[in-house]
Amino acid sequence: DTSHGPILYVEDISVSFDGFKALNNLNLYVNDGELRCIIGPNGAGKTTMMDVITGKTQPDTGSVWFGQRINLLKQSEHSIARGGIGRKFQKPTIFEALSVFENLELASAGSKRVWSTLLHDLSSLQRDRIDEVLELIGLQELVRRDAGELSHGQKQWLEIGMLLMQNPRVLLVDEPVAGMTGEEVEKTAELLTSLAGKHSVIVVEHDMAFVRSIARTVTVLHQGSVLAEGSMDQVQNDPKVVEVYLGE
Ligand code: ADP
Picture 1 (tube, rainbow, N blue to C red):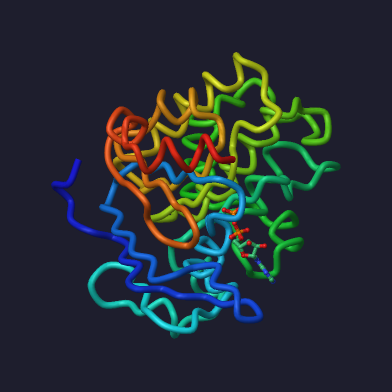
Picture 2 (picture 1 turned 180 degrees about the vertical axis):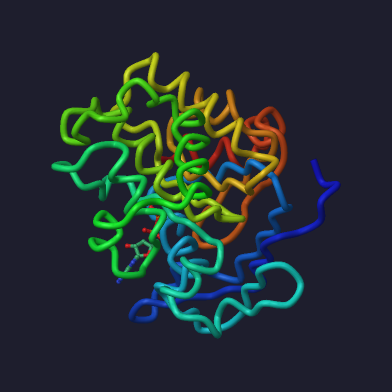
């Protein structure tokens, strides 16, 4: 779906660590509302790419644009997170001793005095958003449960829910289905698919069956650059891609 125009331009990004090029003239264009999967063998540069987009790593060359006007390389990691780019790491950072509801409540405070938000009444807007997010992540029934008692998959969905409280335009999701049961994988596919449209979702994932089930466009990274891009069928039949994966 390219009707919305680009939301994220990654242009000619290079990053070196001690002379080793982790990213080598990387280009990536993601449209508003798109669900994009990024695959590639270990060491291809996927994590480094996400680090550059989220302001954690400064590249040696290139630029990253959010929409037409905002140069992300001039922004701090903190302001990028607050400005509309949410990132979900593999390991959840939920508060295990608090309930599902309280976790979402804290997330709605963003980076303001987080703990003190639990002492105040929620605005009706915040309450509505929590209800909306609970429905999206399918945890309505578990709203009073301590987050620490959730299953592995439920914890991952709660963390996605916490990011959604900030209403990000772009959501970066790192290996969402690692360690999940088959049923959890299916639910995660539904969740990420339902988020596309309202948000751009960029998923880095090794599980090819999962990628096939959600992706419209797949970008294959290799040695810090884009090796191939297209539908899952296109990239899987690309001889360059076959060679890289056979050699792994
Ligand atoms: P992927 O996420 O695709 O597995 P990474 O982005 O983690 O790839 O890594 C790309 C390459 O850069 C790897 O060879 C890795 O060893 C190297 N690399 C990543 N981060 C650092 C770092 N902080 N210092 C040195 N080398 C790094």
